[in-house]
Length: 198
Image (cartoon, rainbow, N blue to C red; front, side):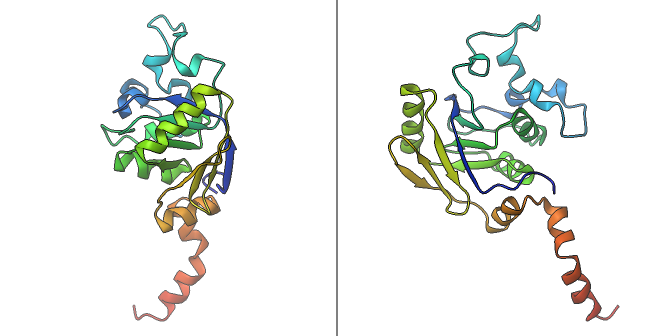
């Protein structure tokens, strides 16, 4: 499998209510030399997390022990800019399995879906409710159900549906990337090919 199966996730969340976060802010270009999906989490939001001398910026949310969890809650237009898939790799490698926003850049959304990060797009109103729930209680939990395609604020029970491509949904439920999917139906492909003239 390319990554862990995704079904339902219940977790606290890390708030990053900044609009127009681009892929260079998510993972600066100078860290794109590796070709494997490992180690990118160390440099997620590198220039926001660290000073030039390598010390932590105490006021950045990822350096604040008050917040943790597998859900990252971003502002509108998350993942804009370049098409670098390393941005999604960095999010995954850091430990996030869900990113919530009121709007995603299409390429970033697809890159996330290809590696097992679920981009959950909600209305601006529901995003505001999520952020307010975290502000009121940093340990507030949320339930993201891929089968039901819903995200729920556990404290209030408020819920909102989200959209996902049917093929990508099936792959995430099975932990497949595109190659895993093809390998999984290899016998069907062979059978189909056997009935066709060369």
